[in-house]
Amino acid sequence: MIGEHNMAPIKKGDTYVVTYSFYDDECEETSLDVSTYSFKLQAKNSAGTTIFTWTNSDFVQINNYTRKITLTPTTTAAYTAGEFIYELEVTISSNKYTWMQGYIDVQNQVTS
Image 1: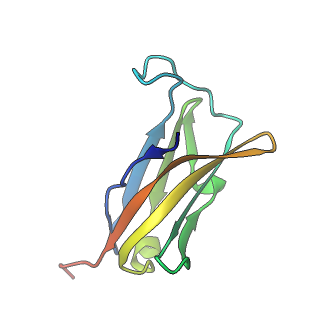
Image 2: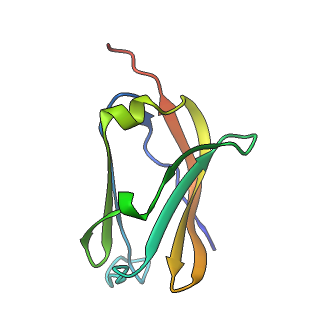
């Protein structure tokens, strides 16, 4: 079963940081070594148009079971505002799996 998870909103023009830690069990007691896995996250609008893509190089390895994405204010400022569906795809060897999906909201800034 694919995990459903709505991500924290991205504020256009802000730094955005999200950390993923992966475990072999639901109790989060046994970490899963993902050091050789490749990650890709893609968000699309309701018409199926790609809004943004995070490639494996965006998923910085913190340790064998944790990856961290840090987006700069310049990057987030270029995103289109709206609510989008996303999927996190993981490649293990030559096999591809969707590990997570849900919604992500890109919001306009109130302050300038």
